[in-house]
Image (tube, rainbow, N blue to C red):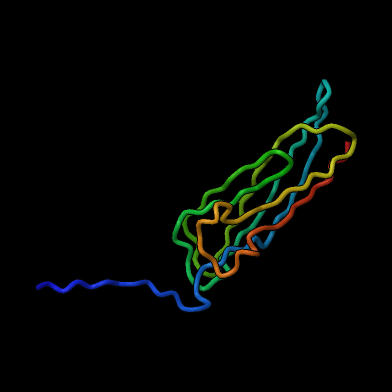
Length: 131
């Protein structure tokens, strides 16, 4: 008879990846447009870091949301202590003379990576557009 061996991945307590949004900034500009709605261009710069003690080895997404617009950035690997920075530009319409635009950056927006701490995956961003 042949012997069947099973291997079970046992994760030590306190071991695992942990994605944290450590920086999120938004800078916007107003562009007048002929008609009712004006155009706003917002650049969001962000940094995500693996503050855990194991690498992220699966694909995960970081989502940037502002007003009713969003962009997603894909990443496939992040070692412990490693970070990556990126920026996205979102363009949308606005009404009025002063706009406060709220949004956020969410690391692992699909919640596909089991992490040590799921509470540090997002940061709020705000930009004020003066017309």
